[in-house]
Image (cartoon, rainbow, N blue to C red; front, side, top):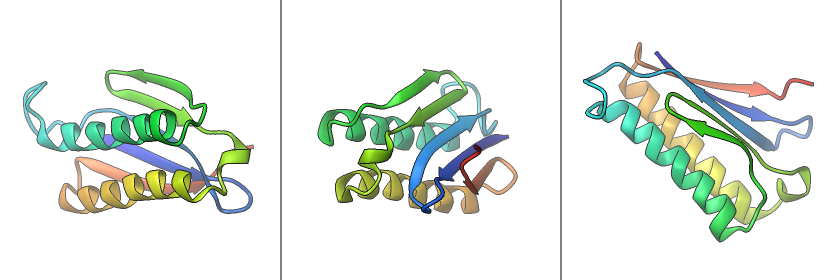
Length: 110
């Protein structure tokens, strides 16, 4: 199962995304569900770094992605639009692929 966690800080602002696993809806490289989630998260990373010019920390590996952005960027409308759009799209994909993709919204761990 592919699990995607969108975390919020104490002020309920999106603060990080963690994704792990695989949807297992096809052969490696042909899994449409995994590809969709991966494309959305890669686009969010690129949008934050290349469009909003925000310093993203984390890592990107096959089946494992973590991205965080600084507190001082979390109130910006462009940053919110980028990550909230990715969250909404992944939530909708998870509804289509129940049992393969799990969307989780949670508070940030201290």
